[in-house]
Amino acid sequence: MAKKAVVVGSGVAGIAAAIRMARRGLETHVFEANDFPGGKINSRLIEGYRFDQGPSLLTCPEYLEELYELCDEDFSTFEMAELPSSFKYFYKDGTTLELSDDQNQVVKELADKLQEDPVKITRYLRKAEQNYALIAPLFIERSLHRWRHLLGKKLIKALSKLPQYKLFSTMNSENERYFKNPRTRQIFNRFAQYNGSHPFKAPAMMNMISHLEINTTPYLPKRGMIQITEELVRLAENSGVRFHMSERVEEILTDGKRVLGVRSANGIFNSDYVLSNMDVAFTYERLLPKAKRPKKILAQEKSSSVLAFYLGVRASFEQLHVHNMFFSDTDREEFDAVFEAKTIHEAPSFYLYISSKAIPEDAPPGCENWFVLINAPTNNGQDWNAYIDRMRTFVLEQIQNILGVDIAPLIEVEEVLEPRSVEQRYSGKDGSIYGNSSNNRFAAFYRHPNYSKQYKGLYFAGVSVHPGGGIPLALSSAAIACQCLFEDEGL
Image: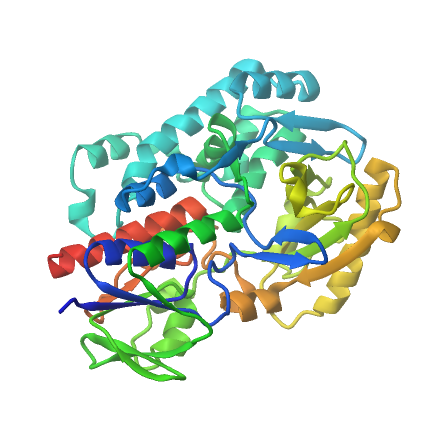
């Protein structure tokens, strides 16, 4: 009889882990509290407008391709559109920039419009590529908590390059070494938002994230980001995974040394292994009430949250692209407001994603689906209704100033996501998007490991544990957790 595995939560890491376990011969069950899978990678249709609810860009598709290969399927059937321009940037004085995955175009654009040194830009992007090539196989694709995963020539090579990682510098301070224009630094500081961190505190090593958007090709799946969830669910079900939707797990059962299964509203479900894809802080607080908590890890500063507006707009604007960034003039002040004052700056930068630019059926003819995203602090009892009203007015005014059109009368549908609803819908501690932030040089080592040192048979995957936030890292966490399980159990 096949051994049983339970996955708590159906985020992409949870589904990816379920696929791996099922392909290894385990009877695998996924329990999900919501009535939809995918966690933050889900979709909502409102009166003809379709909105991706969370991530809006796919990098490192090879992590998805690996799952297709595991299921003996051809990844070329996963249709993706390459975007000619990765991002369009808008500044208050009317200046605009367009950056693509063509390094020569990026160098020319930054040199022509922001008067940066082409040699320094090229050197910066090559360094980001080199650092990623060294670090990803070691620290992103392996456990940092098991020596046998780290031993070997790759570790020696990576450690020999430690000085170039600038562990004692911040993202911003390193960017200041390369770029004289604060607007350029603002572009590259923005990559701290990939895991909800503060670029004036996060280690310079994180600047390698720019490699994924500028040196490589970012994609948008042809059916939108929801295509990732839909395809992973299909692969899982074809592999024999069983989904228990709208069934919230209330406790992970143990005998004090090993997991025994889970308890949900429908009763007890016995299993040999449990993998939690739930925020690790809530896993301990809600599902493991008797466990000894890793206090140092759980006490780390949390990542930022979001304030998002989903707007159906009865118009189309050729000035806008799929990915748009509207920059403020207050870079550091904005991040200090989020992480120190626990508020939203009165004039923050914001991101505007319009998938209907690439996927016309995502909005009615002649219309656009706007997803506006603003950095926000975690929930600490703030007056979120006041923030919503203030930020809605601010965003529409800023876009109106750029486009020369009053947007408010054109809005046909509208929904809002804020930290309280992030916590309720996605079980993110205090509305945190990525668990712990990376606001110190040793942040990578303060993420929870992908296995439990307390209970045999208990594993963890998702953005709140190693290696961190974002789709590629979430998929990698599933692979690492399953590798640990298979090693432990000889599977």
